[in-house]
Picture 1 (cartoon, one colour):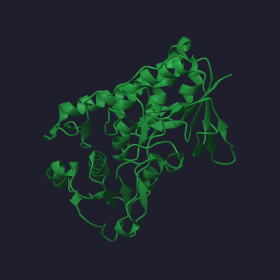
Picture 2: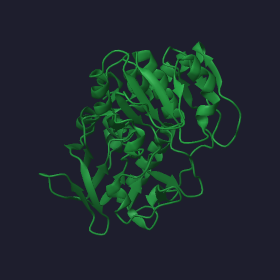
Picture 3: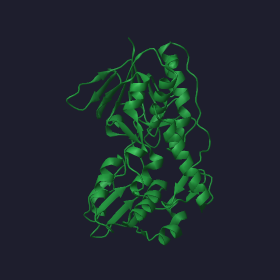
Length: 342
């Protein structure tokens, strides 16, 4: 039987599983396996609430293994170590051996690059993803411990706000001009120090929110990369030049419809990925997908309020903070999590 291998437990793959669980007749006629490091996938929209200590990681995660069971998909908990697209093999961490496939879909997210250790003031340094080690480290800190957040984008700003609510002394370390500048006054009002330089001595923990890059195993696979280091993907969601490999999520960039990484694209891409996987398995032509030009992006202050961010490249200032926008964000996040229950 033809084998479809889903690599990674990102939001798009989770939406596929939910669709197949609720509509078994639409499930592709193939042996389907999903490989992911954990049975739960944290939902990015709720991660700040976890950092603030307002909800558990389990309550803010997608039940990946349960969705697989409901959809008739084999779940393999494993770390991915390599990809050989010519040999059609996915290498897993020992003791598991390589998994072969006829058709591969990649939804593996991206890694966070780390700043130089010299900037951390001697503090332990963690990327903001995966979330479990970060939360474990925060739980081991004394009340009022100093935490340095490296980065200046939306993620770094939102993480900084959340850590203040948790009771940490927070400094934000942007690398240069960026979105953080529009939040300079609210950050200062929250007691967050803006530092263009290294963390001070005595910092207990340093967190990197410094953008995204391909996982090393994927970057070295030989698959083509677009400008900025993401996989070059055709409008039909196949990797350029590799018709048996699909890619979605933060690691993929659609040619002719370049968009910055955002979770909303995962939701929008899921129906097209579903149809094109079925069509590829049936030997039928694939349909194109074009991400919307704009996406709603809400940034929370950790205290129930939120800002509406301007569309990338459009200029303008964030709208807010507003408790009404905060309620909207909570409703959107809650609806998404509820939608992904098996």
